[in-house]
Length: 261
Image (cartoon, rainbow, N blue to C red; front, side, top):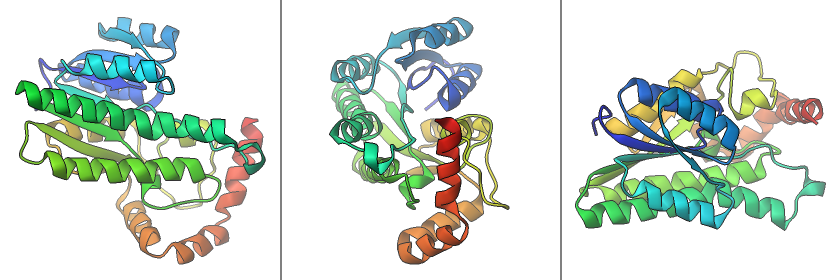
């Protein structure tokens, strides 16, 4: 699809990677519908980008329906809203599990399916970019809910991309790795092992642009070696776990949780 002159809806747009992506799409000539649950930050961004505001909480089914209905008339949709930072096992209950599944998995699935169905039925083109994670390929300790939902959304997106092949609508998964300066890993204060490289928020925005305009099934925003490690971890989880223990991954995440609490 051509971004200039298009209308793109982006969820999770009020801050972090979503705000960076929104600015890049605006720079490339797209009109934006920005959505998030934080109204103040969202309106500030909308004023900067001359964007339409849609306040919606992806944990609330009425909010998901509102986004799905508005997306139907858009040329593209970026499903970026998500949460991380799993609670400790002692604090893990049904409410916590439901919230992460609703935001990270159910909401993008519902919106993507509704969008594709209506665009195809109307004979209109459309593009879906779903922001997942390299954490949807390889698991790490203390990220059980984040891993579960990102594994799930990756499976949905790749299957949906194949299902939509040959139709007027495309679907592409964007898979960031460790991102510096903003985003979940930066905000959580996670200390990375020596030698682990990061990507910038602008790299993620570029991957989202590629997902919308070129529509490969999957676009990585991660260094090549991280993609290799993730693929290796997916086929040899036991060995991957031993390597993570040697690198002290769990201890690093525990330190980040203590700092953030």
